[in-house]
Length: 305
Ligand SMILES: C[S@@+](CC[C@H](N)C(=O)[O-])C[C@H]1O[C@@H](n2cnc3c(N)ncnc32)[C@H](O)[C@@H]1O
Picture 1: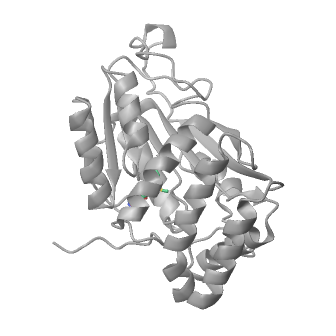
Picture 2: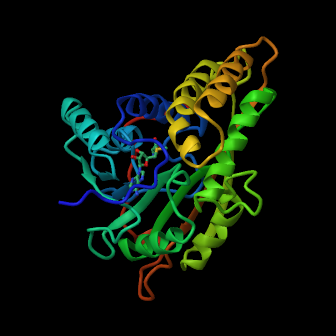
């Protein structure tokens, strides 16, 4: 079988990337205040949830644990992360969590109207701008009437380290050169401002936006976790930067060392902004009033966040 086309700038089968994503998942869930912290996002008692580009499955697994009557399916292009997520589901006895290898830029192998919630976090690194409307149309098709799509993206960090900002500058520019950016000038990813419009254009209603900000300045709780994420991420993305002609390997290595040193300075300050956009598929015309709908799921326990 032919391998699916891959636009992710890091080799998704790399073991270092798996380790990085495992840590990043916890950081994101905690930094955003939990699994589903947005007002008005609820799951029916036996809700079905799809997590797109789920990585090693941390969010999906935790949701399956918290909502034992729900069914959670995670999909990702990487065989390695899917095998890892399956092993985690098995070892934790989570029979309501399933994982499949799938490319989210292609039609998804699920039936119409089969999910109550579709979630995705950090897809902008591989999604081509033209692929977003197609994926959102797929989400609309896959959701039940009244179902919710929930997307979280980032523009990268704001920080006081010149070398770190320069490194991110090269990453944004490389995405622009690769045709994987919404930014008009290649100075940001550019996904955040357009995401609510994309969701509305796909037919979703009551589209809302919420931001979460993780402070990871030196001395804060999140500093070491985000620092480690960059330590690995900056190194893993080097082949992509070289391929896009941003700098030589040696130049990147020098900038990398400088960024690593600056991120560990006592006066280092940094924020990581995340934007969540969610919207509802309109309810079916003859649907009952909300109070007569299926009971909402009660989570097993409150998630700390
Ligand atoms: C930044 S990670 C996502 C992290 C995860 N959503 C989370 O919240 O922890 C990006 C993931 O996208 C996956 N990916 C890349 N291209 C993809 C594609 N075309 N279809 C599905 N998954 C893809 C990668 O294998 C990787 O696991």
